[in-house]
Each structure stands twice: as C-alpha cells, then as structure tokens.
Image (cartoon, rainbow, N blue to C red; front, side, top):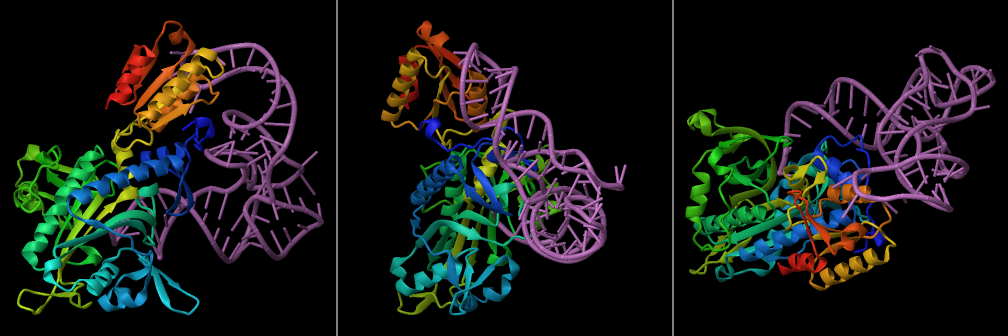
Length: 438
RNA sequence: CGGGGCGUAGCGCAGCCUGGUAGCGCGUCUGCUUCGGGAGCAGAAGGCCGGAGGUUCGAAUCCUCUCGCCCCGACCA
C-alpha cells in the first residue's frame, strides 16, 4: 500500500474526549472515528488490525473443533420470549419494531438463536459434540459507554456455543474453549489470566473470565502471581483430555471482584498475592439445560429417548482486544504492535521523495516485499523525515526500512525495529533478505 | 440512572462574568527555500459560536427549553 494513496487521517494532538492511552492512540492513528457514544467507524488502519485479530481467533477456534457460521444481527423477540430473557434483559437490549409492528431486537448475544438453529437440524446424539460460533457485531445499550472500543455499545464479538449429550462431555467442551482462549490471547502478545467469574444474565454455574492485567482495566481482580506468567498450553495437546491443563490453571486462586473470597486470597503466601485491575477479553460459561429445556432443544439418545442438550457459551471481545493490546504494548511515541496483529509488517520509509536513487531503491524494496507476501506500507508522502519517523512510530509498524540519500550513497539502508528501537545499517539486498525470510 | 463538566474552523483552545464587525495555535491549500527525528518565509481558504424559543436597537456572550458528548459513581462482554 502506498501511503500517498491510502486513507490514514493522523491526529497530531490528543483528542480531548479520550482519557486512556489506547483510546487516544486509536484516534490519533486514524484507526477509528466516533460516530455516537460507544459507536465507532473503523477506518482502514483499524480495520486491518481488527481483521488480523479475527483471523487468529478463527484459527484457534478451528483447532479446538468449533465450526463457524453467521447469524443475523436482528432477532425476533419471540425467540427471546421462549427463554424468558426478553423480559429479563432490561434496557441494555436495543428493541426495534418493524413496519408490521413486530418486535425485533439487535442481538446482544445469540444463545436463543443458535439454539433455534440447532434444534431445527440436530436430532441424534451421534451428531454431538457440536460447537457453533460466529464473529459478529453485537449491540448492548450500555448506560455509560467509555474508553473507546473498550466499552462500546456496538462491538465485535466472537461467540461460540457448545452442545453436548451430558455434563461430563460439556465440561470437555468447556475445557477446549478454555485452552483455545489461552492460546488465542498468547498469540496476540497478551498474558491472559483465567479467573472465576460471575455468570450474570447468561446464567449457569461454571464460568471464567479471561483477564488482561492493566492499570486502566475496569475490573478489580485478585490472583496468585504465578498465574500471570504461565505460558499458554500451545497446539500440541490432547483436545479430548484437557482436564489436567484446566486443573493446573484453576487450582491457584484467581477471581474477579464479584467472586472474590478474601479468606482464600489471604491464604496465598503474601509475596504471591496480586491485587490489580484487569480488562476482560473473554468470558466462558457452562449453563447446562438453561436454554435447551425451555426451548426444547433435545436429541435422541442411545436408548431412543429425548435428552435435553447441555450447553455452554464462550465470548471473546474482538474489538475490545485492540484496546487491550494497545494498553499492553505502547510507549511515549505510539503503539508497538505485536507482529501477529500489526496492520502492516513493514514500512518502507522514503526520506527523499523525488530523488532518483531513493525512489528507485524504494520501489525495488516495495515490489520485492509485496512479492514475498509481506504486508508493506510504502511511505511515499512528501513529509520531511522527522515527520515520517514520528508517524511510523505512532502507528507502530514493527519493522521500518528507512531509505535515504545519505545511506544510499554508501550503499546502505537502515532497518529499524519499532519495539526495541534497534537499528541496523546494511545493504538493501541484505535488509530485504531479512524481511522476507520468515 | 444519580452527581459534575463541556459543545466556538478538521483538531486543540481563547473570547462569555461586564452584550457592540469571531480570534489564536496546529492542520489544509498556493508559491519559494528546505529536507536523517513532527522545517522557514510569504499569501489564502475555512465558522448560521450544537439546535429552538425569548430579552434587547443589537446575543457566541443574558434567560428558558432541548439535543449531543465527556468525566466520577452504580451497572455491564
């Protein structure tokens, strides 16, 4: 992508409404634009990151055996009357009437609809276990949206729903999501700690929140310090037998404020007690027959009798994750994107647009990187060098290939690492070899 | 939903108290000179001062009502 043909509306000054660093940086980088309280347009740079985060979520869901579908954002109220939640949900649910005066709602979640889809097509226990998920826009009419995409009213959520024949099988499904979540967040450079959590209006009796520790987090959390740096389990696991991993991660104390037990926390050795704030990026629930029973989602068991399916649901705040990643990875100059979610892998920075040698070297680099499948942003704007350095640092591209007349005269370019600040001076070919070898 | 604050140029703000031709910085456009960490000079464009009523000869400024946004709490992925 040539910057001169791109849409990247950077802000030099901090917008006054943005209080936390991720919100400020997302606005300054031209990733998002607020259209109403808690409602944002995703500008090209923000959308690129959102898509990369989505892709990681999709890949990890696939490994865990979940199947992607896409349900409508508008749902019929009648479906929610079946489960009883139409009246329970309150004003957070955006209610709409169509031209025939039918009650609709903009989905804040989709347990009812996925259960409806399930019960229409699945009749036999032999089709289980099943996990259906989607990544789609949700709307919750929050009383007080804030902090940019961290608490929007409209937000992108991955929501998965598991269907099993009985509780032991459902717990295995729960464990698969538990492990998939640890791997997902780890790939984004985040340290997520699973914590015992309240189930809220989703219902049920087993629930964990995945928390990123950050001073700007909205929740007060308490946990054993050893959980924070515990590495993710990775892909090389037995997906049908994850109980040991689950037990390892849940035997140490970790709870959100609502579930906090001061006595149990106090029993942790003092130097291992961690009381902090956190950002909730994922939340998983097991709730058994809460929906399958009232909505009559049953399958025939081995003995021919109908059995209500045992369900769980599993959410990841995809748009919120962008805020969490930035909170976890930035410095005074801007965002430091982990390579896995960076909007571009490499920025080719021309220090003298119009200089024949510089232009030729930049074009050569741009084409070679594109050909190698590298996401490259070619900064061919006629800004002065200082302005380019500042803006490329601001938007946090992991590698900057800096090409200017002085270096070229000696046969060299400069390769800069955004995270470490480390710079190498080397010939263009060597730099390209490094950038394309991965 | 309780409490507080703010709406003036794309962004950040001053002007309002004490009514009298709407300003500053950044950005944008033109030209010239520049060019390795947010350049300099010269010129230019851009605002029904959130909206509606009212008071007044005259309202960004005073009064009333509205809409929107932000912050603190309560609530929530």
